[in-house]
Amino acid sequence: MNKIKLAGTIISFALLIYVSGCANHLVATNKNILAVGNQLPAVTLTTPKDQAARNYLGLGDKENFSLGEIKSEILIIEIFSMYCPHCQKDAPAINELYELIEKDKKLSKRVKLIGIGAGNSTFEVDVFKNKYKVPFPLFADDELSIHRKIGSVRTPYFIGICNQEKGKNQIFFSQLAGFSGAKKFLENILKAAGCQ
Amino acid sequence: MKKKLTVIMALLCLLLMGSTSVFARSSSFQKSIYNPGLLKPLDSMLKVRVGDTAPQFALPSVSGKKITLNDYRGKKIVVLSFVPAAWTPVCSDQWPGYNIVEELFKEHNAILLGITVDNIPTLFSWTQQMGDLWFPILSDFWPHGAVAESFGLLRTDGVTERALVIIDKEGVIRYIGVGDINVRPSLEVLIKELQKIDLK
Image (cartoon, rainbow over all chains, first blue to last red; front, side, top):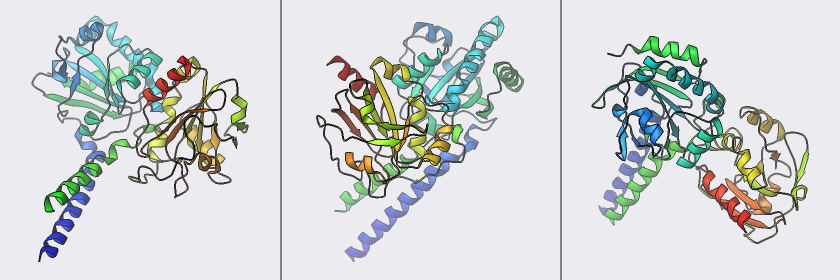
């Protein structure tokens, strides 16, 4: 009888493992998480040590912050990796996007830009930042915890959210790669935004 | 007994749930990456140790030039990056990163040599997706995996471990990092090891 129970336990766990693996696969390939109109899953990041980056995002001295705390109406997030050839190739054009936003006084108050390095350590993010002289804040997602939450998308991935308090970050723009140049991209973002 | 079994099974679940996190994520390779799934982390026995003279080799490179370890003797520190196979997830997500850190290698007077057991045409097609690589890509295809085997890095299925080997200018092995084949090695550790050699 005990042997039967033991066999039952093993089979149950084997099934659980199988289902876990399948569920994980589904999460990894689920693009609906970032569908336009959805709320972006809650993302918490470490507050940058760099004062200029804190000023840019309008953050205080707290150790961590949520995206809703960034002082902007529109937040553009690039999910990148220093190991991704397209991210490397696009880096200068995305810097250009930042410059375009910053040189427009009204726009610079409304729109902020950040990057999250999927599977990149702080060291690797810094390598990327220094290599391409990235002027906007980049954050490490070493353990891929954020990456998994948003459906393990490929890189580079661009997300536009209407940035609101209390974790309500509605996605209005969601795009894998295909960065079409700074000006065109900004036009598309502003056209899609319609944040209240 | 049952409690122990529960703990083991739960750990297995966690291991599997975390398994997809290490796969290639760049859009550069689109759908051309073959996913072999989670592999046995290590599957070979090292034949060399830190302090040993590195086994000599001469391998064809994608550029057409034959590269030997002796080419760098007395000139440069050599970093060998063995990756298991072309067109697989983690490997495709490793060398493109090394491609933007040429300066860090130069700082330490080091050259990087990428090695797999794939043949030259395969390596050519695969590395084309990574942009212009600044470091040579060598094929240890024939005799199959002979160089990897001389270091004890050839797995039983004919691919290599994911390994980094640092050889100083005198041809002596100064670092061997053989990690879990499913995980990209830390760039920080590699650079720190190069710094250590530089400081000595």
